[in-house]
Image (cartoon, rainbow over all chains, first blue to last red; front, top):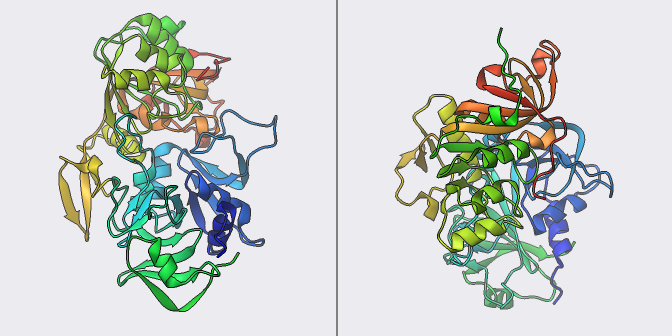
Length: 220
Length: 227
């Protein structure tokens, strides 16, 4: 069995972003997606602190303290970029103008509930940022994550045990083991890592899976 | 003659009363009105409610105001940034109240106040614990949460360029919450890197029209935030 690396998960998801799409990449694993968009596709990246047309990190020494992304990292602007204020940035997110939000996940339920903002650990103050606005408003929510937690516990569940970011919003899950669609009939496995069978994948998943008739090996 | 310029940072923050609600611009370290925060520290107002996206970094600026025990409550979307040590200490000791608001809701609540609205229904946070206790309306097939306007007594913001009427432009992502906050406070106080003659800002390029600005102080070389 050959699970995907984090970069390979990002590369697999990048393949599904269409030319000309407006995309918001969440912090962590999803930010890697920008490195793997196939050549010839133009993707316009949104950042919730007021950028459309965000470019990659600047070379060392060329950082501009007034030009950062939602993770507070230095970025650049692509030709054609636009700058706007926060309220408009969230009009784009909440109002359904962002076509694809690729987000990290702590847990996803079989009905597409997303938990990715809090583990309910009382020793830390809670922080939500723009996660709920994006989850409530983007047209397509794809989650990129490891299939299981570090301790092996499934992250795809019948019901999330962590506090929800938004109910019933995730349409597709990319993990190191599989690509899974959230459908009205439940979770459908579109792709599986080579060497894995449905029983083994089911053993690492906390909700019932069904294999698509036209399923394929998960490769990058 | 309409001239919103004041001659000192002390004059800029004069009259801020104890118990005031202060909107403070900035996202990360971009657009934080550092000199106005220092002036507020020197001014002495206490028992403040601060509305800001982040809860201060390090021990300077907003973190210092909080460490001095001057902030009763913070309304914030992401208080747990890397280095928010002062907030975390005060929170653990239950010496500061936190109202956690999703970032777009925070911004839209201020916009509603600016626009004279009585609130709005948003899908953000519906079905989550941040909607607990709030009015829910089912509209067009989904749940919406009622959110009330969020008005400031004072807004402290940073601009790139200003004229004496208070027309403002910003620099890149240092813009962030400033245009919304400027319109959402009774008294909006601006520190600007540059103050230019009337007419020098292209009317098509004005981001914040001067009607939303009350006081203007020239701070040509602002100190970086978070250090």
